Every structure is written in C-alpha cells, then in structure tokens.
Amino acid sequence: MRNLLRTVKGMVASLAILSCIGIAAANADDVKTVKVGITPYFDYMPWVIAKEKGLDKEVGINLDLVTITNTAAGVAAMRQGSLDIVSSCHVCDFPLYKSVPSLRSFLITDQFKGFIVIGRKGTDTFAELEAKVGAEKAKEQILKGFKGKTFPTVLSTYKPLLTAALDQVGMTISDLNVVESGDDAQAALAFQRGTGDFYVGSLPQETKLLSMPDKYVNVGGSEILGPAGLWYSTMVSTQEWLDKNDDTAVKLAAIWYRVSRYADERFDDVAPIWVKATNERAAASFTIDDFKGTFQLLAFPTLEKAKTTVFNPSSGVYWKKSVDFYEKQNADQLPGGVEPASNALEEKYYTKLAADKKLTDWINSPLK
Image (cartoon, rainbow, N blue to C red; front, side, top):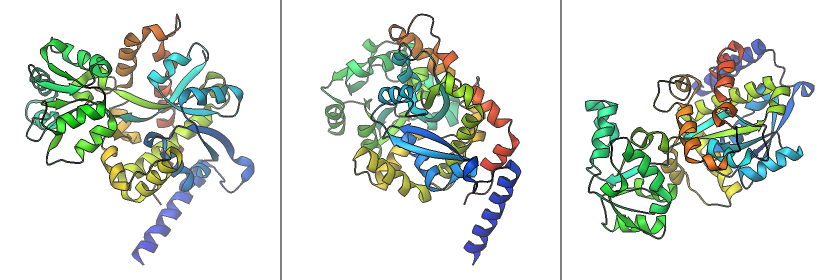
C-alpha cells in the first residue's frame, strides 16, 4: 500500500509539472520526432532508458533511436538527413570538421573516467590523500612518487597521457621504468603476475583489475593526470539543425539530466535496462556486475552537479580544459581557423536549460 501511494503521489506530481510546462503528451500533433544515432557504448544507453520510461513524450519529443557503428558513420547519416543528432566526443569531432564545418556539440552526456592509474592494495590514492593534505599536494605527492617505479603498459598508446601528467611536476617518461607490452591485455596480465608497481591501460582491463579491490586500487584519474585525463562524451548535430530546433535541443538536455537522476538515485532500478540495451546493440554479454565495475569509471552529472563541476571554470574538470589540451595535441587534424572550443555549445545550452524554470522543475520532480 505504501508503494502504491508513493507511485500515485509521484504520478500526480509529474502530471502537475507537465501541466505547468504546458505539454500535452497525449497529443500526437505536439510531439516532435528526433532521430538519434547512438554508438553501442554504456555512455549513451540512458537515451534507451529515457525512451522506455516515456520521458521523451513528457516533454513533447519522440526519440527515434538508431544504432550506429561509430561517430563518423553517424555524422555521414546526419548529413544525408536520416539522423538529427549523433553520439560523439570532443576529440572525435576533430577529424570531421573538414567535411562538416557546421558540426557542433551541444550536450555533454558524461565524463569518461577510464584514464586512470591502478596500483596495488596499500598504495596511496588521490582520494585518501586529498582528505589529508588537499587536492594539489595530493596530486604532487602521487606524481612525484612515480619516480623510479615500474609501469607495464603499451607506451606507444599511453605515452602522451603519461608525459602530460608528469610534466605537471617537472618529470618525464625517463623518470619511470616502463615495461613495454604488446597490448593492454599482456600488460595487465604481467601486472597481475607481479610485474611493476602501477598499470595504465584500457577500460576492459582496468575494470577487471578493479573488480578485485582486495588486490588493486584506483590511484587517481583526471585528478592527477590533469587535462590529459579529462574526457567528455557528447551529442552533436549541425549548426543548421540547432538554429531550427533550439528549443528542442534544450528539451533534449532536460531529458538527459532527468535520466542522470535515475543513474544517481535509482541505479539498481535502471541497471538491467542499461545492460540489456548495451548487449543488444554491441552483441555483447555484459552482466550487471560487469556494468557496476565499469560504472565507477563513468560520471553522469546531475543538473546541480554539472553547475559546480563540468561548467565551472574554477573546477579541475571544467570541460574547456580538456578541449584546449586536446586541441594542442591534435592540431594536425584541425582545418585552419577551426577553434574546437567555439564549436562546443554545451555550456550555452546548459545555461538556457538552467534558466528554464518549467523544465528544471520537471527534471527535479519525483522520479516514477
């Protein structure tokens, strides 16, 4: 009975909010279809959750979800008119600006936190040290502590990441003892067998290691790696589409931030949908336990959290720090005159959404 009453109250509250917004979800003539291309990664499956829960209809949108193999294929389909928006990342856009100058990112979906350093149980972690000495001293202590330590890794892949991190404290790769491996799996296996002090590698191997908390710990991610370890997944469209669908883009952001509340407050309820959606699109066989391990390496900020982190220039994870860093690292991929930060419109749309009381009230209304 208590559960029934809670459900009824939630429905009444949601209906009241919808009434305030002025959306008659049942009126099909008022619903706008948005064709969404999503790559088969955990980052973008909240769109499926939003669809299953009917959140799109609540704000007058019909999400038409299409699985795409990669961002480039999705953007090609978008240019042909078969998609409106596509999943991407800031750096993923760089090689596409030449063929699609009007490409724009307008929504940050999540922070990929898979760029991390893994140590053995008992190693000092950033989280532990920050509480004792503060963020800056914790970062400095950990990075300087890498001197002379052994890293089994694929240096050809992770050298830019490690170089940028060490540069923050005046160190170089030569200060480390790198054990070169053929691939991430070999490096992780060597680490498990006792080789080295720290491991830097791919998300699957990191997830596997972190599933054994009695043996391995997350020493730190972007907190110690700096902008090199800061990576955001996004949604993109074209400036032409955004010019014609400005209100729709704001509503899409609202849908995403409401789903982020489910990830934050009702994770166990939505995890099965999340895993099922990923498995169907990726032809994979992830379990919910697998996903729980991976989820700790993804961050889906709520509307309130995004204000103090993603869109806060004083924050260590401010989005522009990542874009500016990778612009310097990938200058050869950018056409002349292109400024990636100018093509990233997420903060603009976040500001519009935050100023829309009707939509923010809907985002913050009781979850059903």
